[in-house]
Length: 120
Image (cartoon, rainbow, N blue to C red):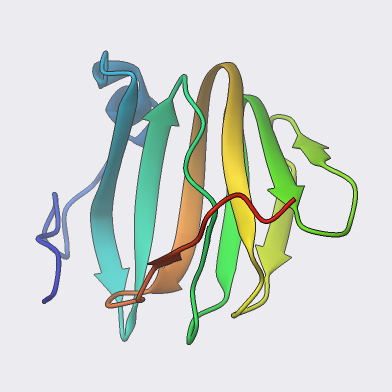
């Protein structure tokens, strides 16, 4: 099932305002799509569960705050504003916000997410 986009094509979107508008502990929406991929905006203050995407790479760009990304056998990464990383398909990881964090994510629009128990 394809997630609903927040904004249609040919709409000017202020991403800073989108990030600031969320007051929930975890807010993750598809802002728009480009071909078979989408741009997600996440604003959150919690940790997300361990998971992987079997068929889709995932690109993160941190806009505000600090995003920590844990992996099974490599050290935790700490990304701050304007840091970017691509996580290859099949890589088990979890994201954690240190304080309030806003990030953009590019991935396949219908990317499957497989949750796993804590692998460490």
